[in-house]
Picture 1 (cartoon, one colour):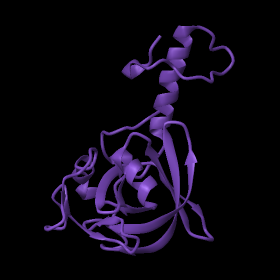
Picture 2 (cartoon, one colour):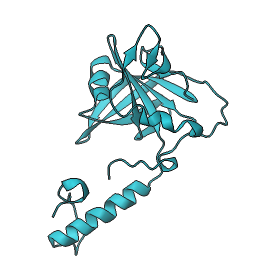
Picture 3 (cartoon, rainbow, N blue to C red):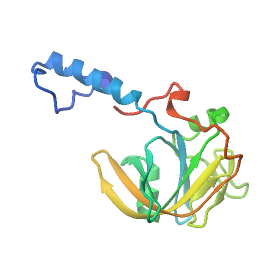
Length: 186
């Protein structure tokens, strides 16, 4: 029996989940629980040569204090994955909770206008690493990839923070997945 979206339920299953119907119900439950986890909602910048992109992302976390390392999970089919793999850099930008419409603008590869300094009409600048940083971001981290971990359908890119900053008041509430009607994965 297929789960929502037409994909079959994915094991493993706990004891007592033995039939295809039970597997489908358990898969739905697991998705709902995973969707309930609190996530940030970010714009990640990537660059390889002169190719640039900004993409909406929600899987990001700090993974080390010394050195300062940040990890992001990127779908292997995403253009951003291609650019991070080739360029070895990424930026991670937080977005003001009031600017939630921005994240919908970066769910597909962007239109680049280098002359205007925009990606999908939003101003950006190149960070120290060369990765694009959304000018409208509350805060940003500029990272160089130190390790890539294959995690199935995604790659977990671990980057060392080489530069960072605030572009708005540090107290500005930042966007979280639960502030939108969006969900991803599960």
